[in-house]
Image (cartoon, rainbow, N blue to C red; front, top):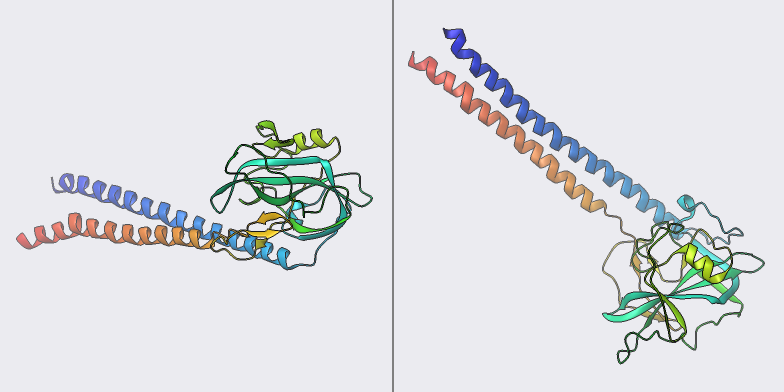
Length: 276
């Protein structure tokens, strides 16, 4: 009879331990995963910072290894093409409606075009749907120009071509306004159709890319365009914070499991023994 009474208690004890330490293992594993993600992001951030600090490159090919050349500075002589010009809609500069200017740039002696993010232009508040004219003081199409900018990764950051994978098909809404093509986003295939020439597998931005994360600065005027400084999004602290939360939860679950096991089993058994 004594064994029959104790057996359910042992089963309950084992079940409680399995549930408790199963949750501990789960939360600890999630903490390790977040720690690993933080290390990956730190490695990526360090590589991006090194790329920004490296000497500029002058690629002779339209196909680059973006895994190794993203965020490298670029220095090329060539000309902007008048027909390879589009505006990307739904942008803002200091809270005012704007468009982003992307124009094809042909390096000297090359048979391909590089899409270049030249910056942003404000819309006219009186006619907010009318595309603005190109600035008069900007280097015009056909003029020899020394292009200096930054090679963007496959998925560009917010001030350039946000969330768009170069070379993949995207939904595009095209409209003509004031003689300019206005698109809802960027597509390399549609850009090739517009220009009628091969397009590189990379985009260059003339807007600055900062080496450290921080608050977004006010826009500055460069060559008639508004430029917004965009920080590299390291996100290391975020993953470390998540890891700390999961590890803390693991420690709390260990203590709770031990507490309930002691209260429900060992302490009750101790009282039973003393009553005898």
